[in-house]
Length: 120
Image (cartoon, rainbow, N blue to C red; front, side):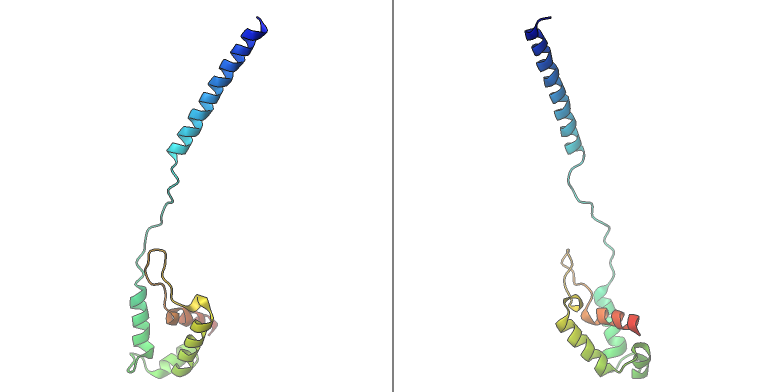
């Protein structure tokens, strides 16, 4: 076998290998598109939770008496609302934001209630 025929065989073999590799890469790319899988949305009624919390403890005539709020949160209503206001103004985490779908997240009152209950 001459050197030129050996070069032709090498080139043909290299071309076939390149084609096989290209086909494999194309099949992998097209088989797995870059779509992100979304988790299932679970409705948590955040707005209803805020309204229930407000109506139970903080409105003018709450469902539960002030003694219940004091026992549950270890402070009176004006102090609690003052803490919620200050913390929500100072700390970005405690401010209500919209999620990626555009729905309102937890309110400052809900976030502060959770934090204070953890500390109580």
